[in-house]
Image (tube, chains in turn cyan, blue):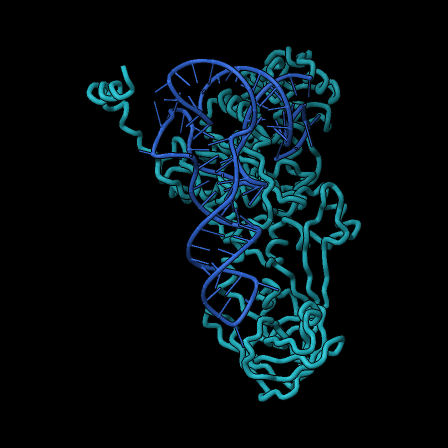
Length: 507
RNA sequence: GCUCCUAUAGUGUAGUCCGGUUAAGCAUUUUGGCUUCUCAAGCCAAAGACUCGGGUUCAAAUCCCGAUGGGAGCACCA
């Protein structure tokens, strides 16, 4: 049969084969969720309050909260505070503030530690059903046995003995002497399943509960129980937890509890911008970065200080999608989103870097009114001029006697003298190609311009990652609110940090 | 070492589950043009990709096998 004949045959007998299947329409936002019922989706973001929130936290929080929003459901912020040695109120507060800054609607906020009694009850249940046992082996031996896939003698104790030991662990045992382990499978390929710890003894002082408890649930135990009793339907976490999915399901199955659907996404990091405290802390201690809000860092506080808007972070993160492929995002993608958000509301101001003196004769005016924005209606400002200006060094160097240039907003000039001290004559409209911003010497205000760059080149800290310039700007700068986003014409967007300092946001 | 995850333009992604209307869409980046008293924004255009090798099929980015690269886990941290 020829291809033509085949087609005819199919057309007449099995038309559905050739009918093209409808392609799903281009998706907007996150992919649809399996098993999601509108109004019934509950998601959560469970950070440990042990550090300042950064872009990685933002990703987890935004993905989870966006899903709740998408399905008209509920989003819970749950402080995962089951390691009293690490948690601090300061971090707890910073995380909450960070999420609020991002504009995330939190329907409920809670702490894992509120449910300690539930954990104990569930722990006892597991002991009673012989799904957990108290292990008193040494830490090293436990590790060795895990690697060699061998169970220890503790695992062979009967339920009665375990109950007694569990009781003893709760009251008498010292840290390190006993742990409660889940009866998993010591021969499992997934090492997480090799009888993992459910509870351990920590005597540190907890930031909200003090010394009320000394036996704390491990991450797996806490997350499993919490997600189940909080009614979480869909739990999204970063990829490094993926091996834990099996364990969490197993714990919940052993307890006959409802299981959430678990999803995973890749970690988000910026090239050359460390996220981990392990790397940032030493930099602070050595004075290489000022603090967690140093504009070179990817913490929310730093991003904010640098002039990045929360809406930009949100758009950026949504644009990355829900993927498990490793993402090392370039910062310029974020910048592009931010620029578009910030542009319509940023006042245009003149600022001169590497100032060179310019004297203009024949000026017909003593002041000039310049609009604050080329398109948006943002008013204007009046600048006094007396013929003595500063212009950018880069521009000054390209000027020779006879050059025509335009001083933006003021008028055109013809250069009569070049060098360190430039001179020029005012000359109406010369159709000058070179256009430049300027400031009046008599009212110039000196500020420090901070330009954050990539902190690490490969593995090495870049000593020049924070460039500082002494620049001149208009007195108008002093009237802006701290935190205002502005655009220094022909230089880039900047955020006013103080009366004497601005931070470069991006081009 | 063992186990798991992952692989589409310079970068980030859509498409992959259910193979064919897509010789692969979008964003960013770069380049050119328009507009403009900013090297911004806006508008237009161009450039640029299915890791490799086998297999299944009339047909493979899409399914199967293998290799390679990247990441993670193997804590009494989360």
